[in-house]
Length: 349
Image 1 (cartoon, helix red, strand yellow):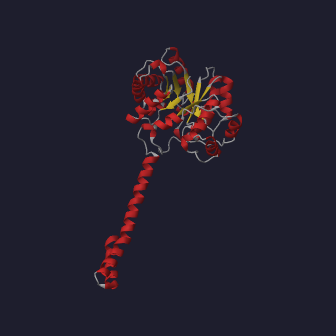
Image 2 (cartoon, rainbow, N blue to C red):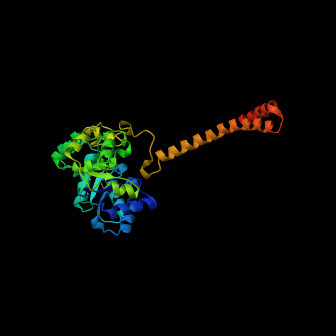
Image 3 (cartoon, one colour):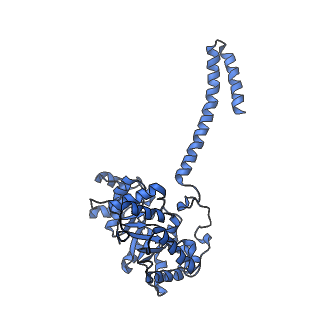
């Protein structure tokens, strides 16, 4: 499996296709997506733009969470992904999250889909040790991959040690913690000392750990920088990064699900209240238009502030201008103050 992976969540439209094309032309060979992201058609288009053949790209996609309700829906989810991607197989098919439930049944079906040649490998995402052990103790084959939030600030040593012991590849979702820890730890000082970006160091750490970091960016320059090639971290630098581990989670909806009790998800679909799924969406819904993005909220807040400033400044400038105008016309400050009072009443009405 290639280590140079690009995440496609949010890579929609023309910009998304161009980002995928840029990554593929630069040498990225793993594209991670999901039916839920609604970017599978963009990936197919980006591959055509880049002029790469299907067998040159490792495609990973995921089961739609609500499809866990029935085996037929799981199969339909994969078929829809295949249509979107314009292929007759995917290289890796993943259970998106343990909270989707009916894990034993759905996992058994994924193994069958692999036997049928619809996917070459199967894996899971956001699974913890207890859930992986649950599969093993149920007599089921363990996943070939677990995609989970692992980065400099959340290293999950107990999970990655289990992966190493059982031959499970660690695929890092959000290897940069979605940028939320940049500039807030010793990594910033290390980057300055090395003349590199924090993103390059974080990704290089993942690569040297033997992980598969799934970088995500729509910016061409960052896509190239995130390749993190041309340098290595010394042992002392790796140890320095090890000390950054604080358990920080950038994805507060999916990442905590690695701790869900196996009994809760093994045979049944859990009540969303057990994992926080009954709360209203606070993000952008990963392409489904649910809620508003942070950028949208920031823009709206800025508009509100600007409108308030305009109104406030207007209320101050109106009376001031009235006093100045009447003084210049020779009517004196008294009439100016009266005009100002009249203006204030009018503006506040």
